Image (cartoon, rainbow, N blue to C red; front, side, top):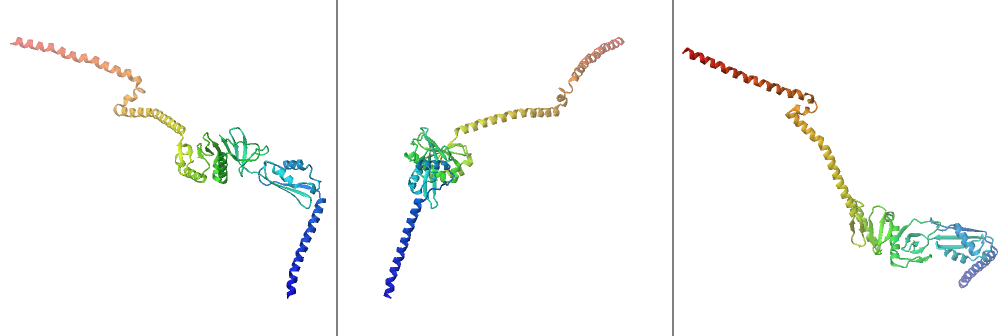
Amino acid sequence: MFKKRIWKPILIGLGWTTCLAGLVVLMSFIEVKKAEMTCKAIKVFIPGSQYFIDRQEIDNILEMSSHTLVGRKIERINIHDLENKLKANPFIEFAKVYADMDGVIHVEVSQRQPILRVMNRFDQDFYVDQHGLKMPLSQNFTARVLAANGFIDELFANKVDSLHTALARDIFKTADFIRKDSLWDAQIAQIYINEQHEIELIPRVGNQRILLGNADSLSAKFNNLMVFYKQALPMVGWDAYKLINIKYANQVVGVKNETLQDSLKSAAVHKARLADSVVHVSASPVKTQADSTAGNAVNEPKENEPVVMKPAKPVTENKPKVIKAAAPKKDYKPAAAKPAAKKTEKKTSIKQ
């Protein structure tokens, strides 16, 4: 029993020793084969949908670093140096280079992902990636990201660098918050920095500006803006306000669009004047019809006289003249009877 206990650890030790010896032999064999192995091909893998850098540029970097790689012995190729050369490119965030046992060199490249494009007041134009690092523009590809312009003092030295000003960091923080929310990413089109170095947001729907101020309490500010969108704007219209102030975390202040109100007032006045002119034009025939109806009730010929009875006016004018001419004849008869009465009186006087 005691002998078994002694032999057991000895056997385990021999097993481990054999494994280590085999591993050493295998590694030496690999090193010998690697020393004799030449580069047969280069495979490049670029994941993602960004195209700031392509296969041709990577090939150029590799060839400039180590001239022609294919056909050279693997042991003479400095893999670590190739990785550093690739990482020096401003569009490459991560690079990994390794060779397999078949003599193929694999290159894996991860590109930077910009989330913001900044145009400062010095006419410099650059991207800011998802880690808050500045990067240059590319001649091969233009990223569709949120743009920021205005009174921005952040400078760009044409290299990958961090943000130096507090305002630039607030802009990046705001852009990152908007990017992660699908609703605000679809609604906000631009970031503008005013003369007071405050952040303003330009929406895609509506003509108003959204005064954000700084990047403090972004969640609360955007929640207040959402409530304002749902409750206030449907009642007054999307263009009723020229400015929506959400820079205070506990309130929303809307500044009315005076230009819109003036235009609405002028439109209302014009509409009222147009309505008055329409009423006057339509009132004249109605008035004539009422007058004609009243005329028919009192004296129907008077209404028709200007239209139908116009030729008959001379006839009606001659009738009174005939009547006036006959009047003297009636007056003459009593005058002729008076002498006859006197004659009778004379006769009676004679008889007496």
